[in-house]
Image (cartoon, rainbow, N blue to C red; front, top):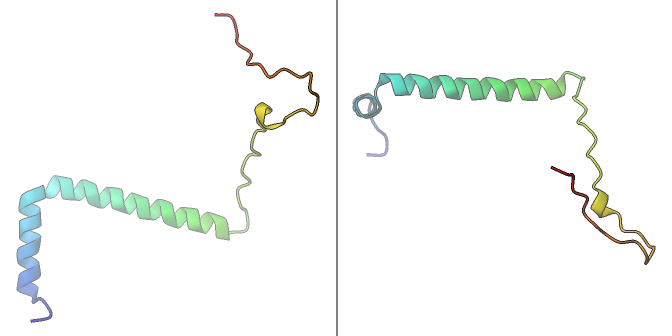
Length: 80
């Protein structure tokens, strides 16, 4: 009662193929395989000793507040 026999799994497989069709199942399988390959390449890339150095984050202008009370905070716009 606790486990399914091989016949149960074959019937489930047959129903899944009838519902989704072989073409859609093939596309899902290739997408899943590509995702797993990309994940493995990403993990392997970090372990080979040559880690990719991320670009330094750009500093935002508005993040620095001046201590000068005469400074006016404005937004520059270009002419169109």
